Image (cartoon, rainbow, N blue to C red; front, side, top):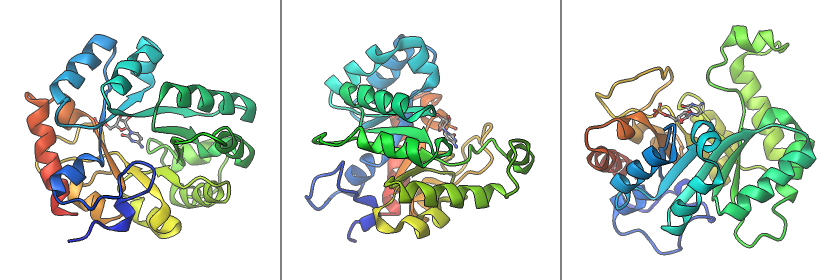
Length: 256
Ligand code: C5P
């Protein structure tokens, strides 16, 4: 079966047709390194070295360990998704995008709510960069329900706000979005095949749900239009993280 175009955005992949679907799935699984220090991250990456290509560094690890935590990942040929959800004045965000690009990260997040000028400045910061990282806009945090959305002065439903911010992001030239499994089909309809949709809240069939509310299995999320899946605890807290990751890759391969 040919690889669907939505799983083949041009920035990260070779033009070779994939012959092995598990190998192809490996290019679309991101492990969230949600750990408090560099030593724990290094242990996990060591466990997953031959199994996983992508790692997400978020606020907890970055604030504790700094850019030094990214360098060894890049040096070993891993792909890094820096999830700092930037939200500041355009000049400051553009500077942060340049700094992250210099570290060699391949994807990074920023808040769509920063507005069109902030998104445009972030995009412009990548002008002339040979292999620019993908900028991913976060629309509405999945922790925001109707009451939270109203509390920040918005009259819309969370779903309406997601759609509004996604359209604004697309107009500013952003084609990547982080979204929950619940939103992925609607965002895929908005972005078309060009969209790079990164989806957390993934749980293999039978796994513990934890604090996630809007979940999908790996195969379901891909079928609904995800480009990349972000998985944390089902891999990082498994007795054998590599074995857990391989099982998820097999589930993903079923949907390719
Ligand atoms: O452990 P788990 O698989 O739930 O981890 C999911 C990862 O994705 C975490 O790093 C979490 O912060 C992140 N994330 C999320 N929901 C969002 C955005 C990011 O779970 N809406």
